[in-house]
Length: 319
Ligand SMILES: [Mg+2]
Image 1: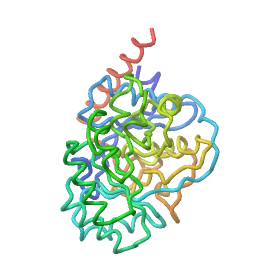
Image 2 (image 1 turned 90 degrees about the vertical axis):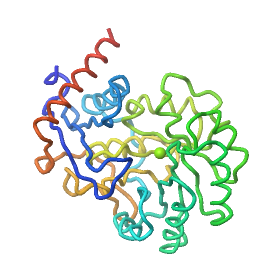
Image 3 (image 1 turned 135 degrees about the vertical axis):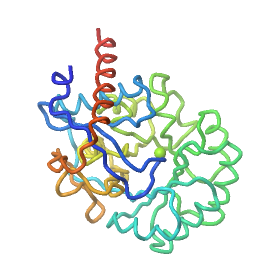
Image 4 (image 1 turned 120 degrees about the horizontal axis):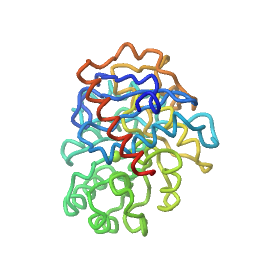
């Protein structure tokens, strides 16, 4: 089964420079199909059902041609994990030319120090906050009003301030900052996306978590909001597919969260898939340096078992 669907399977463990969403090592699997290399990297806590959606994306990218592309380079935003203010300048340096900075925040006090630091480096930066569903509706309203009072109109949007759609609907009319839905999309696949403008102003699209190019376009159409493409902390191989997704929308594309290889110790592609002058070129990439980050035998076994289970789920689903 692995040979049939995932030829040249290679499991990687890549150290991160800063802790990001609670992890310090990113494990992913790469494999090759008729159309090139692909990536499968559901986070370790995800169950097989959710992982199967990521696998559909990975299989589509390996075994089918890319969708029609409307541009050959994509503007990239800088991404700041939750860090101390003194670490901000060093991380921003890894995103040369970015004019938009996405900042992961957990509260007002720490987050506002980071926003302050970012704007001190360049007052022209557009700021996106990402709360990863961390606040109640009440906390979201009070925190976001404080951010607005303190920093004014620097915010392009706040990503997923609360978890549920009901909470987002309460928050949206109360704050002068636009809302982008992320988890509300990728954690609710199959539940439908009617009336999304009641909850959000932007839709975050991610190549793997949404199940690939075709699925992401179907979801974007159903939601009907302007889209922003972002990564799921992939290597240059997965990022290349994210770039293709961003390039496959005919309308003007906003800065995409696809510069996240900068958060890794290094890439498996050469040169590393990083922004130059704020952009990354759209092209298929090969993991020529994959030997640098090979996972241990024990982790390879874990991933092979996981992949077989997700492929079995997919095969059963399509019977
Ligand atoms: Mg997010």
